[in-house]
Length: 272
Length: 285
Image: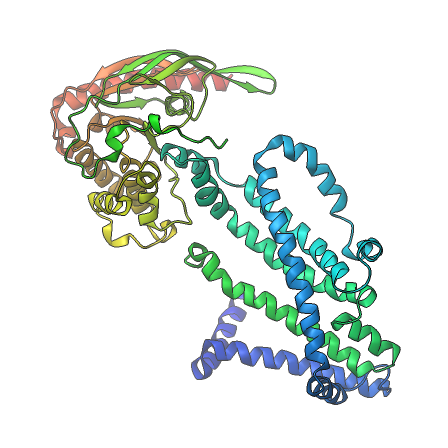
């Protein structure tokens, strides 16, 4: 009963705001409200600690951000990190998706390689860093490796799930309609698995983005991770916070972008 | 699982452009020869289908009728090539059927439309695969045949259940298969839609030489649609009796009031009651 009343009341409020600013406007208002809450809490904490090395206020952090932006340092670090994510992610996807499909449809290959996948999967990307540095040195190549490792497993596991969930009735229907091998793969199996693959891509990109920072903390001399690490050593805590917030913003922007693209990648899902 | 289809298996008539030239060929005769099916259940062999012999002449409309568990769907799956029989073989005309091939197509109770393709692309898929010169044109022809040309650019999920089944029928017919297998195609529809779909099916079928095997447990539906009814025996499934339906075509729902109809109906009810009781009693114990 309470729940019912609450739902109706909530719907009413939502409707009132939406009537004034529109549905998209409502979303924006809520995002701003949420960020405002975050900044207020942050400033209270900063006021209590009263030590800009431990926690600078939002204002100080904003100043630091302005400086990092105007000097171009932030942009070059962002670009360095983005490049590593995009390349590593692309490498992971181009191996993970075909491999997952092959393993979903060829049981010998699956039986032979699945235990290896299960063994490697729980190893966090950070544990690969020593090997990555030994093999590739310092700079871009070890970071590509780490971002690829991070993106690989979510993409692979989801694509594999998609491959094995292709429905038998769709395979049979295609056979009755005379589908050859090529059409079976390109027009039945891949599109049928696409919702899973897409989920893997979204999760994989997020993982890859998190991993690049980790990689840069140790194995690079540019990028957001490196900037954070460097600023910590110089006790420039405001710069650390700018780096962290940039990571958060870009990460959520990337995922939001992919969610937006979904209507073009999976148009038939958008209609349901 | 994925098997390429060699070109020579494609029936020549699948290349035709319009529906008028049908009802003249003699394609689609089905020969079921000593087919039996055993399943392994908890390590024990379980006979789903005792040896079945059945011949269906080209162009006939035949129903498989019986209570659930009588093996009618199993038999249909063997005829379609989706299920390998334990013994025996199936031929459509002179081609042995060992896997799904374009000599037949199936319409299921739950449609097997590809949800990622628009309605038009679903129907055009078969013609395209089989080398039709104008797959989209053929698809449009068949969509108008089932009255859905206006819905060509929607996705299957945007259609009602009845409309989805009509698309499924259009897609199945668009490659001019000699044999059309239907497994309780209207089972999930409401009674009114179902009646209309039955009438539509008869109208469409009248333009085709296609042999139809229609699996159902609805006695009226079976009599109304069929030339012959194969009443199935249960546990294990086999053919109990084949009953002719000597009611002239074209048929309308009015024939359900006719004397012949009720006579056949009573006979079928008796046969099925025997089988249903057999299952009922065996599960009671």
